[in-house]
Image 1 (cartoon, rainbow, N blue to C red):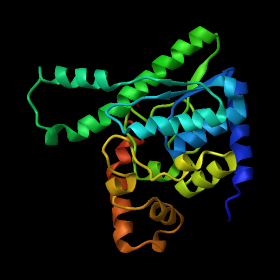
Image 2 (image 1 turned 90 degrees about the vertical axis):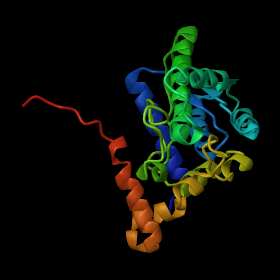
Image 3 (image 1 turned 180 degrees about the vertical axis):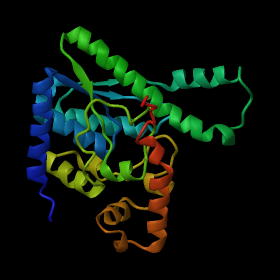
Image 4 (image 1 turned 60 degrees about the vertical axis):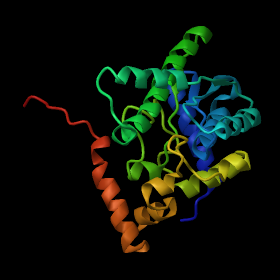
Length: 252
């Protein structure tokens, strides 16, 4: 069935408004990365709650400088405040403290370093959510920005970007997110930028070894993709299954 971006936008906006009304909460805060996902989520919350109830935060940490300017394109277009909270010094202090445990080379710490950054970002956004809730006497929730393709292959950090209070685009593929972004008016340099994590100097698809289109096609029908892509997607999905469920012992 053809994706109807206008109708989907209306459904998601209704979903946000309904949840906020039922739970007596007021505002949304989210990290604005300068990419399509956070741009679309920002647009959805502005439409659902009004720009006066949305706060954006850029969270650079040895990041690409253009990500911050792209984030400003989004906040300027929608009219919500955008704060910059630079995590570079905090990250560097963490790495310095690590020397008390051992002197590790960069190859050993590479994955830990990459995942530390979204975890620092998560802690910061939640801190600011509590802070602004107190300052403005209304409750701010942290908005998630992961899409369906990322989630299917486990392309997120446990305790990092996996942590949020409400997730409006988790059931949309990347192509659907782009279509929704066009409907919302997300600035083109943001909407059509090659997706990357802003952390490793590689695009998402370079890191995954498969395109988001292939992931979307696979979810629709595994036979629509090449054997190579199918094997890659299935391996990623299987190896990251532990990210979705926390095993919890229950007394019988």
